[in-house]
Amino acid sequence: MEKVLVTGGAGFIGSHFVKRLLHADDIAEVTVLDALTYAGHIENLGEAFLSPKLRFVHGNILDADLVDDLLSRHTAVVHLAAESHVDRSFFEAGAFLSTNVLGTQTLADAAARHGVTKFVHVSTDEVYGPLPEGYADEDAPVRPTVPYAASKAAGDFVALSYFHTYDVPVCVTRSSNNYGPYQHPEKIIPLFVTRLLQGLPVTIHGQGRHVRNWLHVEDNCAGIELVLRDGIPGEVYNIGGGTDFTTRELTDVLLGVCGAGWDRVSYIPDRRSNDLRYSMVWDKIANGLGYSPTHDIMQGIADTAEWYRRNPDRWAPLMRNPYAPAATVEVTAPAEEGTGVR
Image (cartoon, rainbow, N blue to C red; front, side):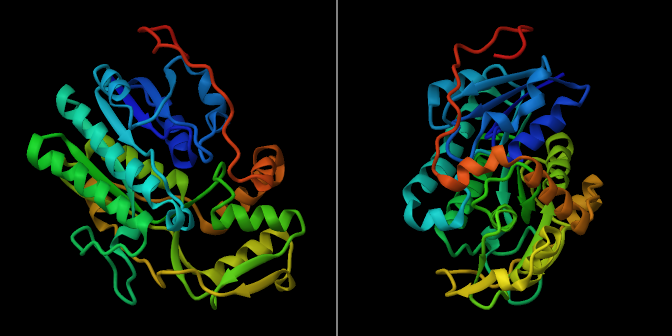
């Protein structure tokens, strides 16, 4: 049975993936390694702590000794820990490069030493850069335009280099924009929903013509699990299948589910280097691994908005102070075999 280390497992996508993995009968143990920065919250794991298969370690992927110790006792790693907000990368590029590149290298080094059976590096469609037309497949050129996307692209190449050089069984996944419960309100869907629920206005960059593909986080996690189990080492897998919206179209949907009108919307100058369109194809994971997204976009957004409506205690403090630290967690040495949650 597999013992899987999930980095960034207290984050948005990571916490959804951990809960999914804990339900698998052939997974003996899931260890979350998370630094609990502003976007990672122990509360995201919630009911997952009821599982005796879950262990939690508060730590940083840049801590080489800690990473080495953990990977010596795990058979696979799913690497989701990352700095992920484009706007923040304009002002904190060094932190993005450190975590997303050097952190990946630290994990890959340990994976090479301890012979893991699979290393899944979770990335983004933003590495392909803007596509005025057409679609990016896994062999498309990588042309990132912002520090965030550049750091993720560099992390992709670092991880894949360890496959070619050291035979580490690396797979890379690149998904489109995720949405769903537990997402930090710095991202557009939870930002707009939480502001609209408070009766506040929202703003659109430029003319609102930027196109993004929106994929429910559970569909992305389903794709990641397929790659963990059956992905071919050395391969990249696009995970898509959501719905394309311009910012204006997305705003219209969010206004509808929140019962608000366009009088709450204003336009502001476009942000720097705001790519007009991302688009990719995902035939490879569909045909090769049987991936098929299942969430309807309208129902998914309605359910997501309802989660934020019902859980203001989870996001209201972050609206007051988006840089607020996560809850303090006391963590001792890793639990011994069979001792459950630590």
